[in-house]
Length: 226
Image (cartoon, rainbow, N blue to C red; front, side, top):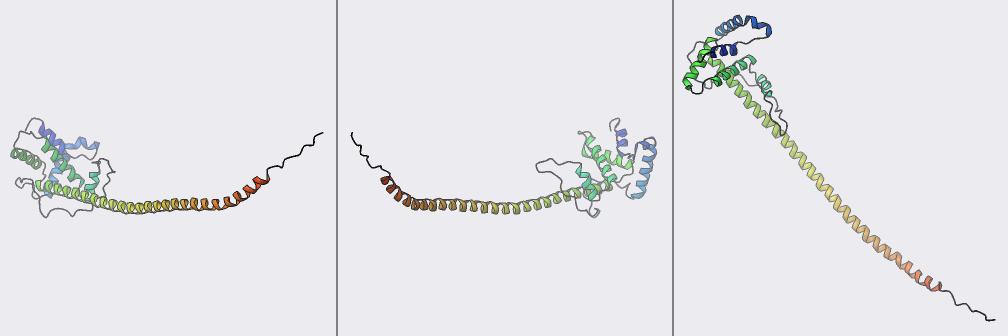
């Protein structure tokens, strides 16, 4: 382990409640480690490779609805609410995150066995059982799976409602188009009937216009010559 990594690990695994706890960090870390060692009988168990631990997962709670806006990017801060809804303890999740940070900080050239030994030694030094980390990880994965399923169910509901609305709007559009066609046909019939009626009326006008024109011609006047 390179120089300074131990101090970094120490900082990762000491959980402070507030700024005033800084002065008693060492004492709090020791008390926390002892309490966790007493609570976990398997704290000193042999190192195990990461694997799914059957039968130790808490019952997952329903995940909250997806909150991703259409076309938007998911806000990773929502995962905290997802974990809480699924019953994943906040402190356990923080410990899991610190283990992940430790794993990611290890030299890439180191073998997997060396990396596991480093992480296992760090966890053992603070009285944290590997099984405890694995159970938390399994709970987190179950919460994330539930979150995806919840999002899928919500998406199905939205799409189903959208399809119903589209069908309704399509029906309304077809009805409006039918009314437009009826109105156009009615206007055409109106124009035809009106033209016919105008022709009938003009028959009378033309009839009298001809006589009126004939009577309107003045008779020639006789001029008496002196």
